[in-house]
Length: 453
Image (tube, rainbow, N blue to C red):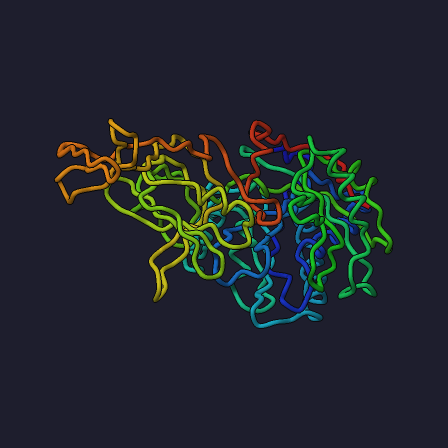
C-alpha cells in the first residue's frame, strides 16, 4: 500500500444504493469521483473499486455490487469531512428510489486495510456473511472506522466487504460505465447495435462480453430504469476509452468513469475435492464423473448427475444458456469433467443442484451400441433364441448357441476441452475462456489520474 507520510489513507465503502425502482451504486460513486477529483488536496491511489459480491445471495438487488474509494486526505478531519459529504449525497440520492428491499449504507476505514477485513471481503464474494460475523470482526479492528445505515442493515456488509477486498494481489479487470441524463431514465437506450458489433471486433483482444452473435444482440446496455447507458468490460483503462469512442450514441452522456473490478475473474468459485463440500449458496469447482445421461426437462433445462465415488449431485444447464445445453447433452456416464458453478438449495422437487457456468471435459468414455451378430453363412442379421440361448438366422436357419451381441463403438461428438455458455448467459463474476492467460496478479497503489469525464 502507498506510503501515508503525506496524509491519511482513506477507504470509503458504499453498498445497496440501487433498488428495484432505479438508482445505481456505481452512479453515486461516479458523482463522488467527479466532485472530489476537482479538489487538489484529494489524491486518489486507485480507480474506484467495483466489487461484485456472492451471486447466490437470495436478497441481492440486481448485480450485487458494492464499491470502494481509496484516496489520501491531508488529515483525519478532512477524511471525515469527505465521508460526511458522501453520506449526505447518498441520503439525497436514495430518497428518490427508496425501497424496502434495499438497505443502503456507507463505511469509512482509515489506514491500511486490516487482514480481518481482507478475509471478510473474499468471504462476501464466495459465501453469505451474517451481520453478527461483521460485528465480531469490527470489534477487533484497531483502525479508526465508522459507518452509516441510511435504512436497513445489510448494506453494511457490502460496504465493509468492498473496503476489505483491495484487489491488490489477485486478478482484476476494468469496466467503463457511461451514464444517462436524468430526462432519459426509463426510455430505450439510444446506442447503435452495429457500432457495438464493430467495437467488439476491433477490440476483441482487450475487451470481452460485448456482443452475443448467437442472437445478434449487444450486451453492453442494461434494460432497467437505472442511469447506466452502457458498460464496456476489458483488461485496461486505455483500451476501454478507445472502445468507447467507436460506439455511436444518439443521446447525451451525463458522465463516464472507469472502475477496477473483480468481474470476469471467477473469484466467487473455490475448488473442492468432494460433493460433501458443495455447500448451498456457494460457488465451486469440482472434478467428478458423469453418472447419468443428460436429460432435457420441462422449461428446456438440461440436467445430469455427477459422482465423486461416494456421493452424487445434480448439475443443471438452464434454458438461458442457449446452445451450451446442446453440448452438455452429449456427455455420457463415465466421462470425467470439472464443473464450474454455484450451488442452489434443494426444493420440494429436487435436491441441491449445481448451476453450471462452464465445464472442462477432462476425458470421454467410449460409447457403444450393441447389435445382433450376422449369420456366417448368408450374412443375414440373426435373431435371439432367448436369454443365454444364442442366436438363429431367420433366413437360412443356422444356429449358434454361443453367439452374443456385437459391441460397436460410436464416435463421440464431444471432445476433451473447455465449453462455456453464450455471452448473454454470463453473470458478472464468471470468467470467459477468452480471458484465460490474461489474469493479473498484482496492483501497485500509486497516485493516479482516474479516467473519467
